[in-house]
Length: 196
Image (cartoon, helix red, strand yellow):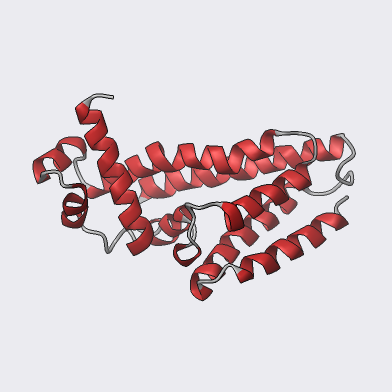
């Protein structure tokens, strides 16, 4: 990796950490510069504006992470409901990166930036749609292979599960305690039993 590429990646990673813990609006370019120990000129060499950097965070850090943690686990056709449950368990309980007290980075960005920035909204909506569509396909395959009852509304199930995830992340952030996640997971498992 070239030095300029390493500098850019360092800025993105450190900025993401600050934004995840403090929020996008309250994190200043000066704080990002101080944390990364680059010059202001180096920052603006890589990013025209703070929003330009924010979009780069979504496209270059969040989307690959999202693909690995939210999309790939659903691409195993063997048992879709178990795959979804295990993915949720991993995201809520086992994932070292996602902190209960800070919620979900994608959800945080959506809540904070969607009303103000069309480009952020578009990028974040693409993430959400990709997750929803992958889950719908997984559920439909589960109906085809007999793991899920036929005739159910795959989109309805996916939207219900996704909204539960976004909601439980926010409750976890409010309570700053993973015990609320366990309640959600228990109810998710019970719900999935009704679909088999």
